[in-house]
Image (cartoon, rainbow, N blue to C red):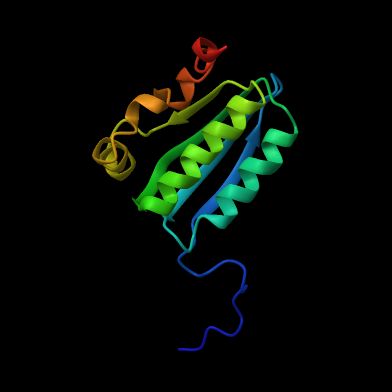
Length: 130
């Protein structure tokens, strides 16, 4: 099977990233698929672009992440650092269970993030960091 028609900047098994913006100036980056060493670039770009917009609240929806490694965890900590440096409230959505929760717990990083189970709960998320 030939893969010549694929976009070379986005491998076939790359994380799918979608940005959602609300009228209340909240930015949510939805990530689906693997968040691994060779698939974090789309998420990192989306995070950087959204933080440049200086939203009132920034969230990463990780409920659709199927696998995560050290590079994926680094991308998450980098996002948190960037948001913190810009004084933008930040939270992870859907990282309370599944592969992301397991990886955060194993790396002893869970306490570094505000984690909410669903998108409905991001309205008050991140406010404690201000």
